[in-house]
Image 1 (tube, rainbow over the protein chains, first blue to last red):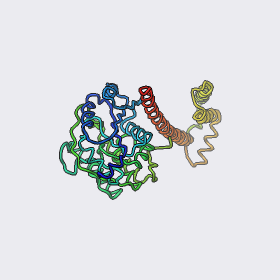
Image 2 (cartoon, chains in turn red, blue):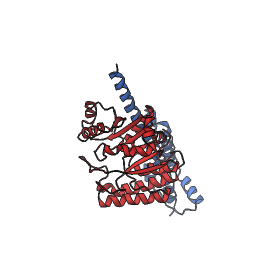
Image 3 (cartoon, rainbow over the protein chains, first blue to last red):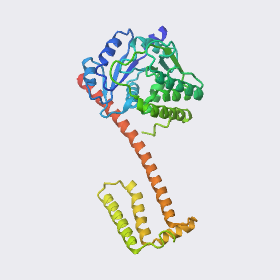
Image 4 (cartoon, chains in turn orange, blue):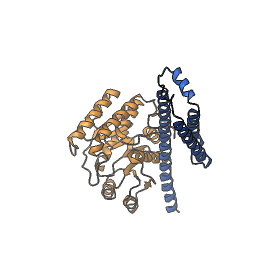
Length: 247
Length: 123
């Protein structure tokens, strides 16, 4: 790991943000304390609050989308940014404070070891915020489904704390699901023979704001993601998934 | 007895007038370019066949006999529903394509804006 770092891989932290003006300053502060060399970009998904101003105050590059695209569209913009600027590694981190920058090094370590994707999982050690029982049941189901379809067990398939190598940056810049992208992209990556590893992280409950998946949407979420995951498993290789006609 | 066979002449006149108005409306939409020709084509054909059918309902009797459907009006329903399904599906495909294109454009605009601002800052 230390060896690879010497090669000075250009690393980008992508923070998709919608109405996160309150949470971002703390995240920026914590990121500054991390003893690693990386750049940050915030993708402001057309927030009505001061998200953009907060980024500027802190001198963080911010891509402001003129129209709200949802989490998938925002994250994909981050991958496009990474591709455009020639980054070797891109790390996704939520703007709501759930992901602790202290684990950044650990998440990155698997990429240094040659994995294409490294996922921060809150369930390996079971410490910290574990989310509600129903949610855990849903996540368990997706773990089972992904194991069934790809043969690999991913303990936290919905985790948005993940690092990607250059190959996956290219793949995701070209094609990325619109919403609830995490489980689907895992299957797409595995189907294209990319290697995924998980590392144990401790997540925190979100500081303020609400989750994108409310109770009423839970059933819709389960059905949609199940379908998306199955579609990704039978999609043509090279990420020619159901979600992207040629743009 | 056979559905539209004993259609009253009043109903027929109403249908003819209705379908003619529909046809003229569609043509006007195309003329004023409110409807893209690609999609207009379907509607021109549809409204034109409505006009034809209301003037010559015998066409429908022929189609019904051909398909072994007892009541001509059922043949009409079948044709219209199939056509509508086709149109709606085509539109879903079109909307998906547009959504993807819009998404790509929005992302591109965001990235360009960021580059522009950085260039401004750097002088």
